[in-house]
Image (cartoon, rainbow, N blue to C red; front, side, top):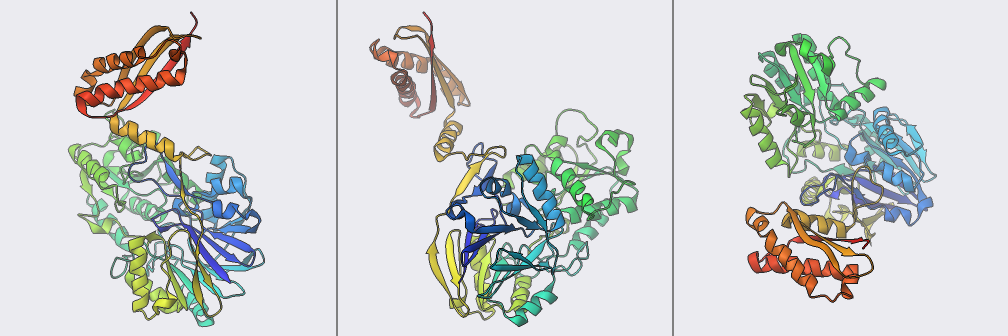
Length: 549
């Protein structure tokens, strides 16, 4: 029996991590992370919980990567610290994976794959990559053969008839596999709510040419750092129009360098200019490619809005193109970014007013139908997306004639088993997430997150009391300091100090020799004062110092 278990990516956008199991062996398809949304102070990334793999570590025979986006390979360093297994990917995908692993100080066995070149993972899995078009180069889907049957994993894909790099999704090979018989298709659901077809990247190319060719001043184009197709045609356009190009943003510069090393991009020595040479190029001859279209706080574009003078500072007369869709949840930040750019006197173009400055890298409904028609699977599982995306894709498959009993709405942790002529739900495995900082090895525990939320919502109150070592005599304090409280509450800190002193005085000298009892009293006294005055319960951080007499 062939078992399929998602550890991430089915129920959320990102964290794509899928386990295939046959006999006593497993293979992992992608190993992605997710970026936090909402109320997670101090959290930079979110990883899937690998516990289901660690329960039987010898069963995992390898990881196969479909492409070079962080939501498909970003969690590799954390997995490979615990499980030493080989990793397969295309040249550019491995280049980015290698960079991430070296940053983390993790060694790994990286094996290059090529389209239509079958390889084995363990004894149970034969994997054949197939080229797919996506927003990052060197992307593949996977044909996975087992003794039970053949599974097709689409990867992230679209059906662009005019891709910038000329690499079409390999429908011919997928059709041949469909003729042989496909047990199950697992297909990208990100755009399952979008009717019609996703626009070609040529649309963006034409839009850029129209906008940039009529611009009289400096042009700034903000893109995702991984969208190298878009970088390629922006640079080619600049060359034709006699502009020099500056790349700004670490992720963009790194990805271009890696793509040049593996031969996906040329060196562009005739058109690229270093940031230190910007002042030597007139503004009307400059095109800046940068990161920051999502208004990330430390991004290149936000740095160009700094109040400090500099050659890259956004000024009146600049044309700024935000060439990406706004990630759900980022709308307020992007709106604020647009307003700041307009306040500087820049002309700002973004998808809401000029749709042609961005097209998606994911298939819309007509393309998803076409893949179903080509592959003709016996069973279908929608993958990659929130629950609403999975639902929409499932309904589309049923409209295409797949009966309900042969379609499966899976979410993270669900297990579906496929036999030669049937499939069934087998229950669930424990799954979860790990909130992390990028440089951390251990996750941030839920208790710490709860404390951070409390500090963020209620302000920070710090109580300091200095007591004699070994006894209970108060030498100095308590004193109360606060950050982030409303003005009225800040003005009441004197009363909070009195409340802390009163609570401390209620303890006997012997009890004041116990640090924990002292901390409890200080918290109680400060909160009592705020409760009486404002009806609030701020987060209180008590500090007890012991000094020599």
